Length: 319
Image (cartoon, rainbow, N blue to C red; front, side, top):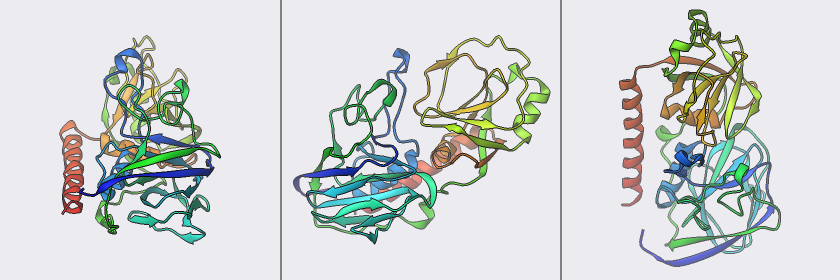
Protein backbone atom coordinates (compact mmCIF):
# COMPACT_ATOMS: atom_id res chain seq x y z
CA UNK A 1 0.00 0.00 0.00
CA UNK A 2 1.68 3.31 -1.06
CA UNK A 3 2.44 5.94 1.53
CA UNK A 4 5.19 7.63 3.49
CA UNK A 5 7.46 5.98 6.00
CA UNK A 6 5.88 6.16 9.45
CA UNK A 7 6.94 5.14 12.94
CA UNK A 8 4.63 5.33 15.95
CA UNK A 9 4.89 4.60 19.67
CA UNK A 10 2.42 2.92 22.00
CA UNK A 11 2.70 2.88 25.80
CA UNK A 12 1.38 0.02 27.92
CA UNK A 13 -0.64 1.25 30.92
CA UNK A 14 -1.98 -2.18 31.88
CA UNK A 15 -0.86 -5.46 30.39
CA UNK A 16 -4.08 -7.46 30.78
CA UNK A 17 -4.18 -11.08 31.93
CA UNK A 18 -1.81 -12.27 29.19
CA UNK A 19 -0.93 -10.08 26.21
CA UNK A 20 1.90 -11.14 23.92
CA UNK A 21 3.34 -10.24 20.54
CA UNK A 22 2.51 -12.90 17.95
CA UNK A 23 2.69 -13.41 14.21
CA UNK A 24 1.78 -16.53 12.21
CA UNK A 25 4.53 -18.62 13.77
CA UNK A 26 8.06 -19.93 13.67
CA UNK A 27 8.69 -22.54 10.98
CA UNK A 28 11.60 -24.81 10.18
CA UNK A 29 12.87 -25.39 13.72
CA UNK A 30 10.68 -28.16 15.14
CA UNK A 31 13.43 -30.67 14.41
CA UNK A 32 15.48 -28.75 16.98
CA UNK A 33 12.67 -28.84 19.55
CA UNK A 34 11.45 -25.27 18.94
CA UNK A 35 7.62 -25.04 18.81
CA UNK A 36 5.73 -23.32 16.04
CA UNK A 37 4.08 -20.67 18.28
CA UNK A 38 2.10 -17.84 16.61
CA UNK A 39 -1.45 -16.52 17.02
CA UNK A 40 -3.72 -19.30 18.34
CA UNK A 41 -6.63 -18.01 16.26
CA UNK A 42 -4.59 -17.47 13.11
CA UNK A 43 -7.71 -16.80 11.03
CA UNK A 44 -8.95 -13.84 13.11
CA UNK A 45 -5.37 -12.55 13.29
CA UNK A 46 -5.01 -12.75 9.51
CA UNK A 47 -8.29 -10.91 8.88
CA UNK A 48 -7.00 -7.99 10.96
CA UNK A 49 -3.76 -7.75 9.02
CA UNK A 50 -5.53 -7.96 5.68
CA UNK A 51 -7.96 -5.18 6.66
CA UNK A 52 -4.98 -2.95 7.47
CA UNK A 53 -3.12 -3.73 4.27
CA UNK A 54 -0.31 -5.45 6.19
CA UNK A 55 1.63 -8.48 4.93
CA UNK A 56 0.11 -11.65 6.38
CA UNK A 57 2.88 -12.35 8.89
CA UNK A 58 2.99 -8.82 10.37
CA UNK A 59 3.29 -8.99 14.21
CA UNK A 60 0.36 -7.92 16.39
CA UNK A 61 -0.95 -8.51 19.91
CA UNK A 62 -2.81 -11.54 21.28
CA UNK A 63 -4.92 -10.66 24.36
CA UNK A 64 -6.28 -13.39 26.62
CA UNK A 65 -9.55 -13.02 28.63
CA UNK A 66 -8.82 -9.43 29.69
CA UNK A 67 -7.28 -6.89 27.36
CA UNK A 68 -4.54 -4.34 27.99
CA UNK A 69 -4.77 -0.56 28.32
CA UNK A 70 -2.66 1.11 25.63
CA UNK A 71 -1.93 4.83 25.21
CA UNK A 72 -1.31 6.02 21.67
CA UNK A 73 1.79 8.21 21.80
CA UNK A 74 1.37 8.78 18.05
CA UNK A 75 -1.52 8.46 15.60
CA UNK A 76 -2.36 4.82 14.91
CA UNK A 77 -4.62 2.83 12.62
CA UNK A 78 -5.62 -0.48 14.19
CA UNK A 79 -8.02 -3.39 13.84
CA UNK A 80 -9.39 -5.56 16.66
CA UNK A 81 -10.58 -9.08 15.86
CA UNK A 82 -11.30 -12.34 17.69
CA UNK A 83 -12.99 -12.38 21.11
CA UNK A 84 -15.16 -9.54 22.33
CA UNK A 85 -13.34 -8.18 25.38
CA UNK A 86 -15.28 -4.89 25.38
CA UNK A 87 -12.86 -2.57 23.50
CA UNK A 88 -13.13 1.18 24.05
CA UNK A 89 -11.22 4.29 22.99
CA UNK A 90 -11.17 6.89 25.77
CA UNK A 91 -14.19 5.15 27.30
CA UNK A 92 -16.26 5.13 24.11
CA UNK A 93 -17.07 1.76 22.47
CA UNK A 94 -14.57 0.81 19.80
CA UNK A 95 -15.85 -1.42 16.99
CA UNK A 96 -14.16 -4.71 16.17
CA UNK A 97 -13.71 -6.34 12.77
CA UNK A 98 -12.95 -3.04 11.05
CA UNK A 99 -10.10 -0.55 10.86
CA UNK A 100 -10.15 2.28 13.40
CA UNK A 101 -8.19 5.54 13.54
CA UNK A 102 -6.77 6.11 17.03
CA UNK A 103 -5.30 9.62 17.37
CA UNK A 104 -2.33 10.45 19.56
CA UNK A 105 -3.25 10.68 23.25
CA UNK A 106 -6.21 8.27 23.15
CA UNK A 107 -6.24 5.16 25.33
CA UNK A 108 -7.45 1.81 24.07
CA UNK A 109 -8.88 -0.25 26.94
CA UNK A 110 -11.15 -3.26 27.47
CA UNK A 111 -14.10 -3.47 29.86
CA UNK A 112 -14.22 -7.25 30.20
CA UNK A 113 -14.92 -10.58 28.54
CA UNK A 114 -18.20 -10.84 26.62
CA UNK A 115 -17.57 -13.72 24.26
CA UNK A 116 -14.64 -15.90 23.26
CA UNK A 117 -11.24 -15.97 24.93
CA UNK A 118 -8.58 -14.26 22.79
CA UNK A 119 -8.69 -10.93 20.97
CA UNK A 120 -6.16 -9.59 18.49
CA UNK A 121 -4.94 -6.03 18.04
CA UNK A 122 -3.21 -5.40 14.74
CA UNK A 123 -1.63 -2.05 13.86
CA UNK A 124 -0.98 -0.50 10.47
CA UNK A 125 2.64 -1.40 9.78
CA UNK A 126 2.71 -3.93 12.62
CA UNK A 127 4.73 -4.09 15.82
CA UNK A 128 8.44 -3.62 15.28
CA UNK A 129 10.57 -6.14 17.13
CA UNK A 130 13.58 -8.23 16.08
CA UNK A 131 12.70 -11.68 14.73
CA UNK A 132 14.10 -14.68 16.60
CA UNK A 133 14.58 -17.75 14.40
CA UNK A 134 12.58 -16.02 11.71
CA UNK A 135 9.56 -14.99 13.79
CA UNK A 136 8.42 -12.31 16.22
CA UNK A 137 6.11 -14.76 18.03
CA UNK A 138 6.51 -14.96 21.79
CA UNK A 139 7.30 -18.37 23.29
CA UNK A 140 6.93 -17.76 27.02
CA UNK A 141 8.41 -21.04 28.24
CA UNK A 142 11.75 -20.24 26.60
CA UNK A 143 11.57 -16.41 26.90
CA UNK A 144 11.86 -16.29 23.12
CA UNK A 145 10.71 -13.63 20.65
CA UNK A 146 8.26 -10.77 21.07
CA UNK A 147 9.01 -8.20 23.74
CA UNK A 148 11.97 -9.71 25.60
CA UNK A 149 10.27 -13.10 25.37
CA UNK A 150 7.52 -12.16 27.83
CA UNK A 151 4.02 -10.73 28.17
CA UNK A 152 3.32 -6.98 28.10
CA UNK A 153 3.75 -5.15 31.42
CA UNK A 154 2.81 -1.65 32.63
CA UNK A 155 5.39 0.89 31.52
CA UNK A 156 6.44 -0.98 28.38
CA UNK A 157 6.50 0.85 25.07
CA UNK A 158 6.58 -0.63 21.61
CA UNK A 159 6.99 0.73 18.12
CA UNK A 160 4.75 0.35 15.11
CA UNK A 161 5.89 1.16 11.62
CA UNK A 162 5.31 0.88 7.93
CA UNK A 163 3.54 2.79 5.19
CA UNK A 164 0.95 5.28 6.39
CA UNK A 165 -1.73 6.60 4.05
CA UNK A 166 -4.82 8.71 4.47
CA UNK A 167 -7.11 6.71 6.74
CA UNK A 168 -9.70 4.62 4.95
CA UNK A 169 -12.16 2.49 6.90
CA UNK A 170 -12.18 -1.17 5.92
CA UNK A 171 -14.97 -3.38 7.27
CA UNK A 172 -14.41 -7.13 7.32
CA UNK A 173 -17.42 -8.71 5.54
CA UNK A 174 -19.87 -10.47 7.83
CA UNK A 175 -19.65 -13.69 5.82
CA UNK A 176 -15.95 -13.94 6.73
CA UNK A 177 -16.46 -13.60 10.49
CA UNK A 178 -15.69 -16.84 12.36
CA UNK A 179 -17.76 -18.33 15.19
CA UNK A 180 -16.33 -17.09 18.48
CA UNK A 181 -16.43 -19.12 21.70
CA UNK A 182 -19.02 -21.47 23.12
CA UNK A 183 -19.59 -25.20 22.77
CA UNK A 184 -19.34 -26.69 19.31
CA UNK A 185 -18.68 -29.61 17.01
CA UNK A 186 -15.05 -30.05 15.93
CA UNK A 187 -14.05 -31.87 12.75
CA UNK A 188 -11.03 -34.15 12.89
CA UNK A 189 -9.09 -36.69 10.84
CA UNK A 190 -8.97 -40.14 12.46
CA UNK A 191 -5.48 -41.24 13.51
CA UNK A 192 -2.62 -41.61 13.00
CA UNK A 193 -2.67 -43.83 16.12
CA UNK A 194 -6.16 -45.33 15.95
CA UNK A 195 -4.75 -48.85 16.13
CA UNK A 196 -3.58 -48.14 19.69
CA UNK A 197 -7.15 -47.76 20.98
CA UNK A 198 -9.77 -50.34 21.83
CA UNK A 199 -13.15 -50.35 20.05
CA UNK A 200 -14.68 -49.07 23.30
CA UNK A 201 -12.15 -46.23 23.42
CA UNK A 202 -12.85 -45.18 19.83
CA UNK A 203 -16.60 -45.28 20.45
CA UNK A 204 -16.21 -43.08 23.53
CA UNK A 205 -14.06 -40.48 21.77
CA UNK A 206 -16.22 -40.08 18.67
CA UNK A 207 -19.56 -40.44 20.45
CA UNK A 208 -19.24 -38.49 23.71
CA UNK A 209 -19.25 -34.83 24.61
CA UNK A 210 -16.11 -33.51 26.30
CA UNK A 211 -15.68 -30.42 28.41
CA UNK A 212 -12.72 -28.04 28.32
CA UNK A 213 -10.94 -28.32 31.69
CA UNK A 214 -9.16 -25.52 33.58
CA UNK A 215 -5.90 -26.97 32.16
CA UNK A 216 -6.11 -25.03 28.90
CA UNK A 217 -3.39 -22.76 27.54
CA UNK A 218 -1.39 -21.99 24.40
CA UNK A 219 0.22 -25.43 24.50
CA UNK A 220 -3.03 -27.37 24.52
CA UNK A 221 -6.50 -28.02 25.96
CA UNK A 222 -7.08 -30.96 28.26
CA UNK A 223 -10.64 -32.29 28.00
CA UNK A 224 -12.85 -33.90 30.65
CA UNK A 225 -15.32 -36.68 29.91
CA UNK A 226 -15.53 -40.43 29.37
CA UNK A 227 -12.03 -41.97 29.46
CA UNK A 228 -10.68 -43.15 26.12
CA UNK A 229 -9.50 -46.70 26.62
CA UNK A 230 -6.10 -47.69 25.24
CA UNK A 231 -5.54 -51.02 23.57
CA UNK A 232 -1.77 -50.60 23.70
CA UNK A 233 0.21 -48.26 26.00
CA UNK A 234 3.59 -48.89 24.40
CA UNK A 235 3.34 -46.05 21.89
CA UNK A 236 6.64 -44.71 20.61
CA UNK A 237 7.58 -41.05 20.38
CA UNK A 238 6.55 -39.35 17.16
CA UNK A 239 6.24 -35.86 15.73
CA UNK A 240 3.21 -33.91 16.96
CA UNK A 241 1.24 -32.00 14.28
CA UNK A 242 -0.87 -28.95 15.01
CA UNK A 243 -4.28 -30.12 16.27
CA UNK A 244 -3.11 -33.58 17.35
CA UNK A 245 -5.39 -35.13 19.99
CA UNK A 246 -3.19 -37.10 22.37
CA UNK A 247 -4.70 -39.38 25.00
CA UNK A 248 -2.78 -39.66 28.28
CA UNK A 249 -2.41 -42.72 30.49
CA UNK A 250 -5.68 -41.92 32.28
CA UNK A 251 -7.63 -41.74 29.01
CA UNK A 252 -8.00 -37.94 28.90
CA UNK A 253 -7.86 -36.32 25.42
CA UNK A 254 -5.48 -33.36 25.03
CA UNK A 255 -5.83 -31.11 21.95
CA UNK A 256 -2.38 -29.72 21.12
CA UNK A 257 -2.04 -26.17 19.81
CA UNK A 258 0.70 -23.83 18.59
CA UNK A 259 2.98 -23.92 21.65
CA UNK A 260 2.85 -27.73 21.70
CA UNK A 261 5.88 -29.96 22.20
CA UNK A 262 7.50 -31.13 18.98
CA UNK A 263 7.47 -34.88 19.80
CA UNK A 264 5.51 -37.01 22.26
CA UNK A 265 4.81 -40.59 23.26
CA UNK A 266 1.11 -40.51 24.09
CA UNK A 267 -0.93 -42.08 21.28
CA UNK A 268 -2.74 -39.72 18.90
CA UNK A 269 -6.34 -40.76 18.29
CA UNK A 270 -7.21 -37.93 15.86
CA UNK A 271 -5.97 -34.64 14.39
CA UNK A 272 -8.24 -31.59 14.34
CA UNK A 273 -8.48 -30.18 10.79
CA UNK A 274 -6.70 -26.88 10.11
CA UNK A 275 -9.82 -24.73 9.76
CA UNK A 276 -11.15 -25.88 13.15
CA UNK A 277 -7.92 -25.57 15.17
CA UNK A 278 -8.55 -21.83 15.56
CA UNK A 279 -11.87 -22.53 17.31
CA UNK A 280 -10.03 -23.84 20.37
CA UNK A 281 -8.35 -20.46 20.81
CA UNK A 282 -11.77 -19.00 21.64
CA UNK A 283 -13.00 -21.74 24.00
CA UNK A 284 -13.09 -21.36 27.76
CA UNK A 285 -13.11 -23.93 30.57
CA UNK A 286 -16.62 -25.43 30.71
CA UNK A 287 -17.26 -25.18 26.96
CA UNK A 288 -18.21 -28.52 25.40
CA UNK A 289 -16.64 -30.26 22.40
CA UNK A 290 -17.92 -33.09 20.27
CA UNK A 291 -15.64 -34.56 17.60
CA UNK A 292 -16.82 -35.57 14.14
CA UNK A 293 -14.61 -37.60 11.79
CA UNK A 294 -14.10 -36.24 8.28
CA UNK A 295 -12.09 -37.62 5.32
CA UNK A 296 -8.85 -35.99 4.21
CA UNK A 297 -10.29 -34.66 0.94
CA UNK A 298 -12.98 -32.75 2.87
CA UNK A 299 -10.36 -31.24 5.20
CA UNK A 300 -8.24 -30.13 2.23
CA UNK A 301 -11.28 -28.68 0.44
CA UNK A 302 -12.30 -26.66 3.50
CA UNK A 303 -8.75 -25.33 3.90
CA UNK A 304 -8.60 -24.27 0.25
CA UNK A 305 -11.99 -22.56 0.47
CA UNK A 306 -10.89 -20.51 3.47
CA UNK A 307 -7.56 -19.63 1.86
CA UNK A 308 -9.39 -18.45 -1.24
CA UNK A 309 -11.75 -16.31 0.86
CA UNK A 310 -8.76 -14.60 2.50
CA UNK A 311 -7.13 -14.07 -0.89
CA UNK A 312 -10.24 -12.44 -2.36
CA UNK A 313 -10.65 -10.20 0.70
CA UNK A 314 -7.02 -9.11 0.42
CA UNK A 315 -7.46 -8.42 -3.29
CA UNK A 316 -10.51 -6.26 -2.55
CA UNK A 317 -8.80 -4.20 0.18
CA UNK A 318 -5.84 -3.41 -2.11
CA UNK A 319 -8.01 -1.87 -4.83
